[in-house]
Image (cartoon, rainbow, N blue to C red; front, side, top):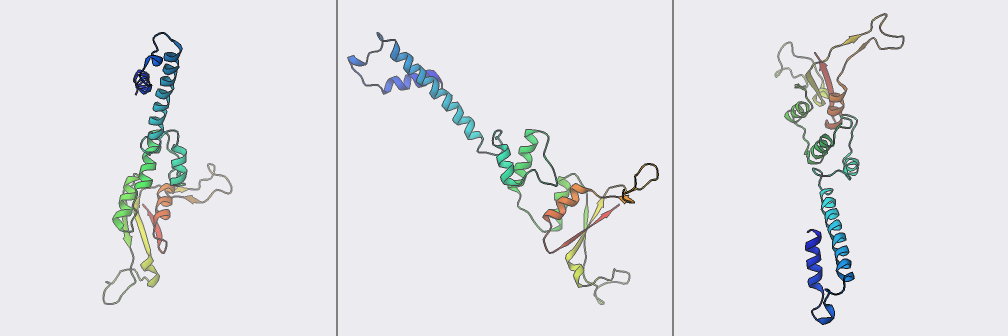
Length: 193
């Protein structure tokens, strides 16, 4: 409601009668006008406050929403715009999780990666073929992420310094995401091509 609507509503709240005629007294309508202005301000504040209750419209409470949702996380960092931060927040609080291969493939795709997943099983004489890897019982808890495009950076004399690793590789964001969401009893291996 705007100030004029509040003013009309307030005037209707006063009793009828000769003592309540305000045409001769200019101070009472000014007082009612001041109240109406304040009610309009409060009404606008309440509407903007209601917007803060929802993650897709929040601005002032966005840091609080992020803190409760565990954002920014080490895997993704803090998004650069309010709209992207809201998108990350909504994705975090609506995520249902999963343990299937397809869940992790979709998770990687949402992060911008195209991967496949290899699952390992213990070697069985009558089941496996000649040439299959000889894996033991513990391999049933391992799985491998394939197809992560990443160049290996080798140590080069003149470019690198003493103490630098001989080679570096890996896609930190994807590795972090997979390790954070993998089933706790499993081991994930990354195959860089």
